[in-house]
Image 1 (cartoon, helix red, strand yellow):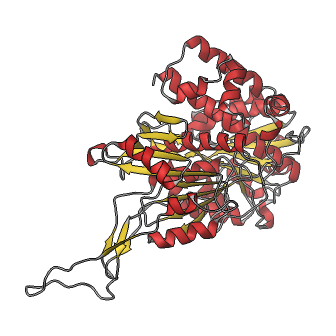
Image 2 (cartoon, rainbow, N blue to C red; image 1 turned 90 degrees about the vertical axis):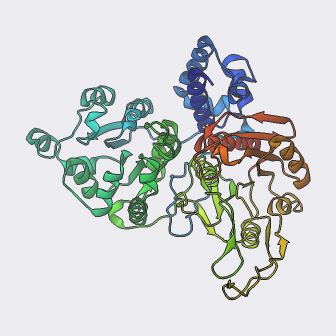
Length: 530
């Protein structure tokens, strides 16, 4: 795919996720071409003139959010606010729920003031657009820049957009005399930290106060909303997750991070700063409803992100299964669980409540999902059945087809006079077929399976979709030369009743983003929230 088309598709997908529009309606509204998004997803090119028209349409609609909600989004696609829910396992739900009225229009937060603490990350540039959007909504912004933030955005640009002076130095006598850090922390209705780097989050969790930003955060008695942004491995690191959990327990609200490409070449995953529409929604929600103040130590229930999957329940399976032979040996495969984890993270980013049923893996589950850890195929099936009902089930796990008929209670020994053991294998339960064939009321409206093949990939996938009763199948070639099994990239073929789509080689995070966006659009067009 040409760079122009790839960049345009990424912008469109973000816009669709933020507004809830279907790809067909978006294409018709933007350039009178209902197949625009589908063609881009197939890897087709686009002219510069068309790209300019599409971007002009998105800019115009973004400048009039009320018009998007009231006119561009059909009534059937306007999503009610999801019910608050805390993720299990002590992991905080990552994004603040946006309450949406029955007509889809958010209550205004005009006349409010936020203190925006801008951290030192490449995503700091998004704060310039965020400030402009907040001012359009008549929300005053007073900005605090960390020293690192000034390497990415200048105080002059922030001041020009906010219409207020910018604060950065704890020991600036003029700033302290006129508006000290205590006033900064108390005069705002909400403190927003965006982008919140791993270092800034660690400072908050540790109660440090060695610069202006950390002093404001420690001195405030107002609600605090944090928008993390960092490399995926930094986000998944145990120290970062521990710090996030501490802050969540203290009552800090979170929005993001999102899934996508990083600034570093070849890096992708969960760690991007939430997009500006998501940040705006979370800020307006906090201003309207009030988030718990950090100083209270309260631990409120948190809702999911506003998005096309808000109010939906998604089940995802991931990783391999281990079928024991004896206490030390088992039947398994090379699945890493990366694709399933990326799908779970993306569904969560679009507002869903996500149950991730994961086989043995070295990956940390995305923060905010309801994790159910299993080992065997039978345990995975039981966990999925217990998690029903749901709106969508995506079976990305590489489940072992067979297990030994009788597991040895002791380690099977070898020796000079001992014959090689004979293992009798029996077939494991077929999880995809079981759920796809469940009776009405139990069967999810959309059932998606994976087909890992080494030859005639599409032909096998077409047969599998019919044999299993699945709605969609994602087929991929897992031959050793592809590096897909256990790797970071994937090349898939989407098999539906309408035909086969061949997707290009993509990072697994991008495969997840495309798949979940398509599935969310399908649910919006074909099902109603219950």
